[in-house]
Length: 336
Length: 222
Ligand SMILES: Cc1cc2nc3c(=O)[nH]c(=O)nc-3n(C[C@H](O)[C@H](O)[C@H](O)COP(=O)(O)OP(=O)(O)OC[C@H]3O[C@@H](n4cnc5c(N)ncnc54)[C@H](O)[C@@H]3O)c2cc1C
Ligand code: SF4
Ligand code: FES
Ligand code: FES
Image 1 (cartoon, helix red, strand yellow):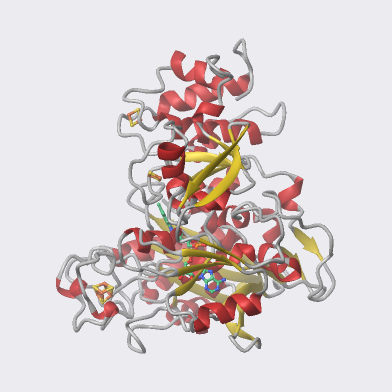
Image 2 (cartoon, protein in one colour):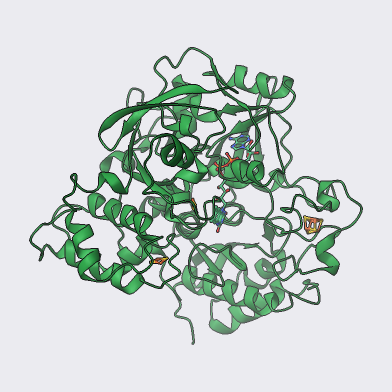
């Protein structure tokens, strides 16, 4: 790693200004993705401005989770994946998030990795992660994965870059209709739908989120769950642990008079952004749940898929994890 | 369908961590219940004495003081020095192993305020004022812990390169387990899910931990 200065500033305002005005200064939360970039030589920051050093009320809010008077649930950006994983029973209706956190990475990493850092981490594409290669994402003129080894790349929404979004928490948060609070460098706080955080490659292949330097993701808020709301997350990996998912699915729904209502479906690790499947939602909304319906919805979800020559296996895999999540959320045993 | 880890009744963090999730009035937090300790900031970094003062460390060597296996230690290291390098190179504590250096294998696990952390992905300055336990700290001098004895009895190590990390994961599990509650094999598997063992000792590790948890050995506890 390059030499750098650790900067501990107790206020959000000063930390944010420091990053916005100092060449080479970056925010550090858990530091898992940041240190990885530095060790690979992909990033050589001059200063690490520590989010964990934010003190007082501001720091407490970054580190805590709480329930608003109206029942909305707020999770501070510094809450760790391990903490989220432990909250399943308190997350009635929002189980998908706790399940996804419990399966991401490893126990040691989950004790360090934060909610905010997880949403803002950079892609795992091996061409991007190789210091000597310059692809579109690093300002080059072509995507090396498109014609290279793209077994782990996008089957939906790909091009001109074919990364898959790396965050396991992003999908469940899209399915659960979460919002995020972002502090601008001028101190104003804006609330946006989680989907608006993510930037697809047709807009800008060089970034995956819309935050400017010095802007701080403060928290994620989950809406009040509708009565009877259920959610579930399912994923497939090559190895059971440690590995990055090959495909993930998150589902939110509720039952009303034997029909599925308010269905939201988000797919992970199949597209450059957490992929909301409106096709699957349309197939499910207002229908009576059944194994056949879920199979049809899974077909609909991959209808727009355009796999590359080396990753067509992801199409049935993606259908499989979506069916699994639907069965779990609707509490209907899987046929197999 | 594989059951999510947290569905299988893995030991929970207990009331302190659960207490993080509080009922509050609209957007105002119940004050006064958050301190700077690990229970409320498990992913947290250095415990800074005066949290109101801005501090800049480095880029040259700066002393960092923390508790290592019960003793107060100090090392003068650059901010870029990982906790793992400081332990191995500056503090002569070579139990934690350097393997991947990227957070993927858990051979470098140590306990920071009781929680397993990958020391290759932390900076030495992150543990200022905190308690670090390495595999060396699990035994009392030359007297191995019950867990370590069980590893020997069950042949839970071959080349031994992953073993210090395995022991840290298992010790953390045993220490967090609510008193008197038995452990299941699944809970042990979940706890060591990050520990890569090329020699394939996993079933022996699980057997060793279950034996200690059952209390059927001479010495119980981690
Ligand atoms: C072995 C291994 C397996 C993994 N498997 C998975 C997996 O299955 N699923 C998954 O989702 N992830 C996985 N990860 C990735 C890991 O979850 C992320 O690297 C981690 O969540 C990043 O969080 P952090 O707090 O460490 O972020 P940092 O590294 O501290 O930050 C990442 C980036 O976000 C910025 N940032 C952080 N917080 C904020 C904030 N609040 N406001 C503004 N900017 C901010 C930082 O400046 C930096 O640019 C794995 C990692 C490893 C090592
Ligand atoms: S998928 Fe994106 S990051 Fe990977 S080579 Fe193509 S442009 Fe680069
Ligand atoms: S050496 Fe730290 S996780 Fe592998
Ligand atoms: S005993 Fe050899 S790597 Fe585990």
